[in-house]
Amino acid sequence: MQVGLVGWRGMVGSVLMQRMSAEKDFDKINPTFFSTSQVGQSVVPLDGAEAVLRDANSLNQLSGMDVIISCQGGAYTKQVHGPLRESGWSGYWIDAASTLRMSPDSVIVLDPINGGDIDAALSIGKKDFIGGNCTTSLMALAMHGLFREGLVEWVSTMTYQAASGAGAQNMRELILQMGSIYDAAQSELSSSTGKILDIDALVLDRMRAQEFPTEHFGAPLAGSLIPWIDSDLGNGQSKEEWKAQAETNKILCREESPIAIEGICVRVGTMRCHSQALTIKLNQNLSEDHILDK
Image 1 (spheres, rainbow, N blue to C red):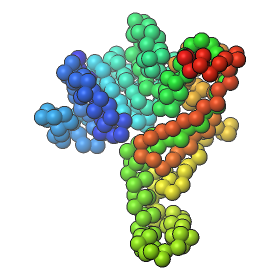
Image 2 (cartoon, helix red, strand yellow; image 1 turned 90 degrees about the horizontal axis):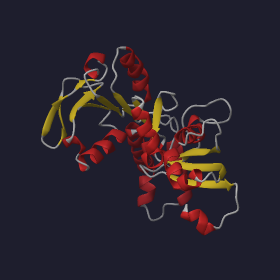
Image 3 (cartoon, rainbow, N blue to C red; image 1 turned 180 degrees about the horizontal axis):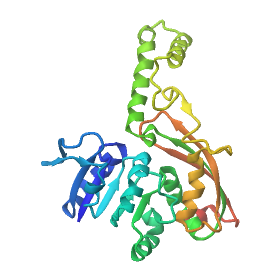
Image 4 (cartoon, rainbow, N blue to C red; image 1 turned 180 degrees about the vertical axis):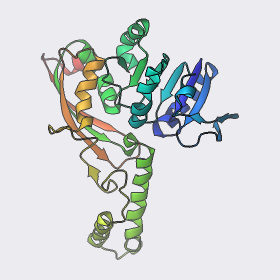
């Protein structure tokens, strides 16, 4: 099986490569590594296996793949997926980006919950299989038993999401912000007589400075937080907040009778660790033990 990998050196792609290598998935496929920026260069993506990077924007080269796994991001999917399908390519497209999640032709993959739906989609010829939003997937996994039993009336979710959710460049920017803050306060920190309010003032001045690195986040994250993730939907919700209800109900095949899910998504200054708190309204009075058993 010819499998093309796009975006395999980013944050999500790097973790995927590690897991595929650990599971020995590469022993079962013929991988081809694509790039949008370094076409023709030789790389060693796996131990001892040199490869020449193919052109991720070439429909001709992509069309030779039985499966394409993309971790390149939504802009790439928008640019390539449609034209590739229109060219007649009928392979399997597996994607981490959100672009195709809500398409009627796609399946959001969360195997412990909707493995049967994935098998059914394969049997009727569906070819687009998309990973779900990170905190949506975590919530759905944690609450699957309650959802399965039809016990949930609504959910309020509060997520605190790491820099990794925004990608490798944002993780780098967080480290740059941390370094810049330290540089600003270093002399006072080194002094045993340094006053904490003076240190705080130096930190705030640096965070407000024109040269403070905010190209990717648009605001300081180190020493702060950003209570808004993704685009404004114009109704008081961010797109990240909207995903919880939209994607969960699609995963559960509840689009015609959706479970109400609302909340707030906050970007916090951690590298990779997301956290989440849930307030759940059940439609029955149940004991704590009964709920935990689900």
